[in-house]
Amino acid sequence: MKKNWPILVVDDEDVMCESMAAWLREDGYRVDTAPNGQQAVELAKSTDYAICFVDLKMPGGMDGIETMMEIHRVRPEASVIIITAYATVDTAIQAMKEGAQEYIVKPCNPQEISMLVSRILKLKKLQSENAILRKKLTRQYRHHDVITKNPRMEEILALTQEIASLRSTVLIRGESGTGKELIARAVHFSGNRAEKPFIVVSCAALTETLLESELFGYEKGAFTGATGQVKGKFELADGGTIFLDEIGDISPKLQADLLRVLQERRFYRVGGNEEVQVDVRIIAATNKNLPQEVQQGKFREDLYYRLNVIEIRLPALRERLEDIPLLAEHFVQRISSELGKEVHGISPAALKVLMAHDWPGNVRELENVIERAIVTCRNGMLDEQDFSWLQRANPQQNWEIPDVPLGELERRAIVAALERKHGNVKEASAALGIDRSTLYDKLKRYEISH
Image (cartoon, rainbow, N blue to C red):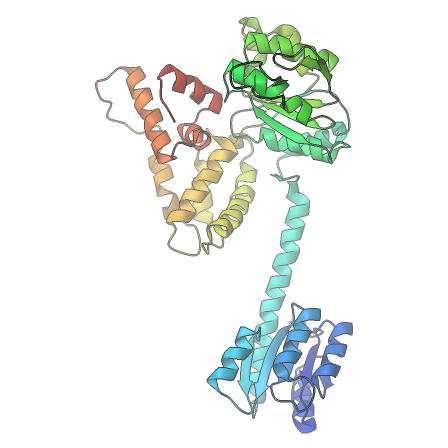
């Protein structure tokens, strides 16, 4: 027990004040006393008291409730215990409502006081240790929202610091859900463009025509419905960074347009005759094997080399198993807070289940799995049974296959996933274990609306 946490006793009765102080000093605590609220607040301004015992009825000036509120104003973390000889339900309710941690009645029992102080300080010690540990873990394992202790990931994060203030184009490669956008943000916000815009464009989500307008903007009358000039994402990102996600899915025409932007940092708006010049850093990401796409004639070789000035390859989650406990704990804390559900952690047995999973959807899939477990959890701790459905979803099971064409089976699986995820393509792709661009292709092929 940390005996040097100071305690303040506030009471206008000298005998009561000194006797309580003497009891606490016998237990080894440092104790100050004050005869009224004004002196108590002045003492609190100069000393960070862990606990303040405050008498409810004090003649003249501030009463106990007012004193407590003023102490909390200067020392929000202090635990205030109201003491009174006149115990009523109304005063108890008022004291607790205004922030009192406890409410005790005179004459005070020294043994009860000792037990009460010991209990409060044990809780404060635990909270302090947790806060220190959380800060230590944050400093050690968290870098620009990327949580890791994997050596390869730490090398990547060190590289993001080295290249942050360069204008060189970066190509981030990795499976869907590995955190490509987080790495792009780490590059941007670590460098001299951090105060400028960071603009994200998903190249797989739009048709060629819409993506062209999205990237470069358009002039009034460029097409039906173009009632005025609209700036594109490249202009909006001027001075900052544009992140082109799923770059491997753009059309041959846009590949040519993008090549010119990379070479000259100039372009024309759709329907425009005036060149627009921008100072923008380009970070691109893909889950495709671009060298293979180049060999197959699906991606321009010159554009690939322009994009691939600095390449970052992200490992899959199954290659960084040591990060699963860290990520799981982070998601439990964040998601339980967002959902307003009291779930305080995850058991070793549950972590064993998560470590054994293959994670085709990587970190994004892990986040979705944790959210589902929190929603259905009936205890304050995620346990093995909260992930039983994940074990049952093992692809090695013997499924009963209906006698229908393979394409129809795939179409049904996509429709079912979209229904479960309420039309959210990002979550549906993670549930299916495929990337978003692949899912968009299949939506078009099977003419599935979402």
